[in-house]
Image (cartoon, rainbow, N blue to C red):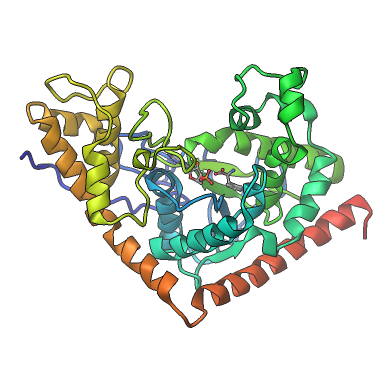
Length: 401
Ligand code: AMP
Ligand code: TRP
């Protein structure tokens, strides 16, 4: 079996700190698999001096916000595309950086949910955030529905949000399985579309803006939603004064982890085949089995070619995110090895990397002391206080106070 020669890169640099004075924010080692920088950063420091922003008020300290829907146990795509990045940001954040992470349960309601199932998924998602390493002493972790100001601000933002913009966005179309060029004029779209699904991005903008977040770490699929949030912040500021910073998307280097069964589609919680995704709670055996039966092709050699060989390229990408080496390096290391040995290595690497998370997750779910609920309660209180500060400013600016 081929083994990796290349040493594991440390992914520890703080993306909020300029790299050696050039104003850029180098995050991953240059040349590593995916783009080596967080995208779209503007110069930002966590010192008390204020730095200018393209729009919105001056920023004193970074505020990091992100969310995940409780629509199933988080999977490897969620982990590499979001959760692992949240923990890195938390662990490398300077004093004064505010970090908030939310289980966005109100967003989950934009497609029909079974109440009992949703109750379970909320807890499971919360336990997963703790298990991956979010520390309640450092980060505020809370259920979105426990902070009513999120929905209050959503109403206010809906008075400035553009219907035209919302109608062009892709998520409501993909959730309804309509073509990308579907429009509100289509009778099928009108019959199926609910207001909540259509206005989903307005609630997302409210999640971000209610905490006056400056940075939002997400996977690539959220880029459009982040653009909408930026636009909404600017529209509001234009009418009522500089209240909201323009939030920056921090797109994870693992932009899109693909399904193990349909490698042209992203790994998702909703795909019918459970073998298409690796859950953070899967046992080592389950992980290895899923990787073993991942859809690849029958070409004799191993190569990295996402267009023509999406299955094997996805496995190489996943490995590169764990080992911190480029996909090309992995491909040449394995060029003459069998697909089986690559799959064995990928399966073991994922299983080893997720073992601690699974163990902590099981411990938290087993705990009878009420730990999870108390973290959620306290997180909700801190988030409510943060949201109240913004709502006071918003109401004052709008003549509501
Ligand atoms: P969701 O499960 O849709 O609430 O997504 C939570 C976070 O995980 C978001 O930041 C997504 O961009 C990210 N994410 C979800 N699926 C993937 C994937 N397959 N690859 C990379 N990131 C993902
Ligand atoms: N729409 C995001 C997703 O599906 C979840 C989300 C809701 C979110 N509110 C947010 C992400 C605010 C970042 C910031 O993944």
